[in-house]
Length: 365
DNA sequence: CCTTATGATTGGCC
DNA sequence: GGCCAATCATAAGG
Image (cartoon, rainbow, N blue to C red; front, side):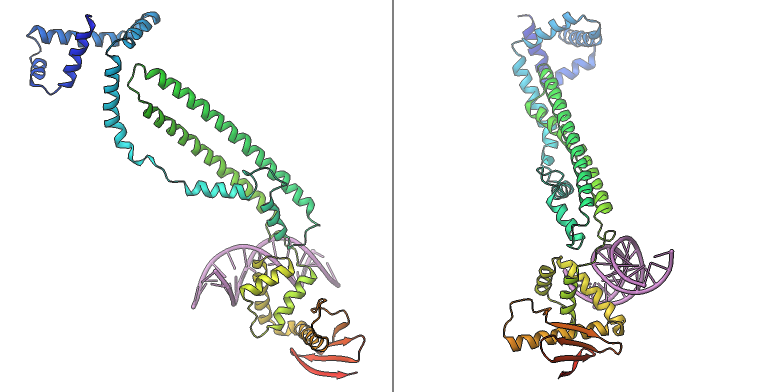
């Protein structure tokens, strides 16, 4: 009963900080009993604060309890929370909404693509596909390397997941700890739930930045692993003979304009079991190397021209042929040192004599 | 082991 | 973004 008016009084005093009467009292220092009493109060509070550490725990608890139980406490607390929110939260509240981090998304996508962060699967299909592509579709002979690669990848994966779990656990622990602490303090300090929320989001942001570092280093590890095991340049494999023949056939039958369209590239890629970019690489290399030394490729050019001619002949004589028109088994191809190419049909008396990419003779034996 | 062949990469150009 | 030219790095052959 004695407490309440004093509290009310001091509250009013705070609320009327700009009141001339109050400042006058402060400046006067000495004088009226009213001013003295207030000064006494402030002095008391200061004294209490200064000696708070000297108090016994029980005493402090009792004081705290008394404070918490005060009738005006909730109302005052709400007012303080409101003021705090208006002054502090409104300033920083605006830029709370953070856009989804592009860098983080990239890392996530990569980890998913490499089969590190996604669901467990037989070695990561994307990586396996990349490996198969890098090996020129040949496969089989480097399966040992692949299993080694997969083992290393799953090792990275395991480390990544345990670390991630550790971080998450630590984050949760820390969050609940801080929340409990703030909740506890919110009974005596003006801490609104919104502020607790804010603090939690700050903690989460801190931890997610740590997580991002983990993701980054995991990505780096995967990249190093990839470059070690799957770098196509290091693990170059020649295309198989059939693929090379298909590509050469196209090249020499389009020698005047050896630039396959995107569709043609896709078709060739499918036929050769290689990627479209490998087809592009092949044609790029072929064009430049052919141009550099046409003489060297003359023989090859003749041979493929002969094949094309034979195919055309076959097509026209037999109508449409279902079985592999590119390399008819019944034809044999030869070339001599003069740059002539021959192809002989084993059941007939025809042969082709070819030079410089064109059919010179087509005659009976 | 040296040379050649060949698929991939890189930097510059348009 | 495709192409060229130079280059790299490995495969293959002798």
